[in-house]
Length: 448
Image 1 (cartoon, one colour):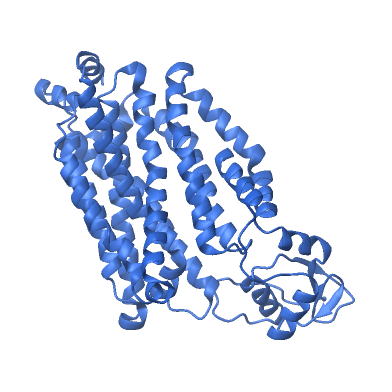
Image 2: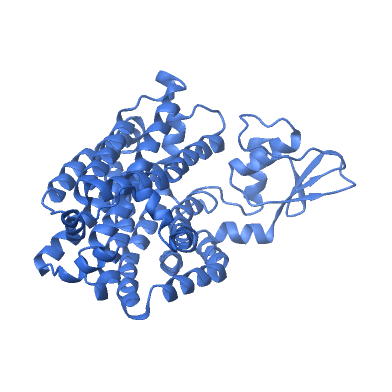
């Protein structure tokens, strides 16, 4: 570690070299995260294609669970490729991770549906997500380290901030590719086959990324350590045995990375699912709004990275996490009221209440194809329509009773229930927020 610091101080890359390092590393990171995010952006189609079930909610949950699997394997990928990066070098490890990610993503585009190959489809899909998680774990940390090892100490925060901004860039690119493909081929062709194109598009991104990264030289810090014979014999072991590193690793994982990840995914993916689901925003409109929010937010990463070189890393991290704890619920309330004020007003004016009598089983299993109890079926009818409701116990009621604004309704009578909802002012159609509403949503995303 001492020799790394010496090497960083001795090496002074030219402005042209710095631009190439940042550009190639950032572009590769954009493409890597595009590959990872495209799955989440198309989670609804993924669920319907690869997870056989009559329960729409279950299909989406299984698809999102597959999304989470990729995250679960990111730490393992970081350890594996971090080990290789310390032994073989940053550049060649870069090439391996970007190739693995691109091929795994394209393979999802070629994967037959569950209707064609049965349960083999979700099994293969999960295996491909594991490969994506491993590759991303090595790529993301490797890119940040590579840039940091080229940066003078007083600009390390600024230079590496472009890598973090590239994460949001990957999300924006996934939105752009999806919306452009939909617009060009039409809804019917999109659902029939063309939703696979964004996955196959990763092959082109892989070629571009490999071309750019082959132009890079090995990290000067790594070359210095290699020439001096100070490369770690066992990087994994030494990471945990070096004095003070256990504490640093714990803080990095749970004090820094965990907070950043929760905030970012809450802003982008949770925000997107919230708008498309509970708030019934037209899907294309929701994707455009969140994509614009992510695009506008790119500059914040660079600004705060620059600021961290002046005030330190700790203050922005602590302040950002504290503000999230304070503002998260108000921000989503603002997004909901701005996205679909009609639903918001209807739930205030005519709340939906599910009353369960004594001894009634009112449990709801989101993973069941068919709910067993009457109350479970009622809750399923409400959840499928993504309606806000409250559940209460009532000693007077026999069985289950549902009221909308105090008026009894039969939630299991599909047409009759929706007619009662319409009479109470609930609009179950898709909406596009007003210009003022869009501005409020964008403000909420930018605050996050």
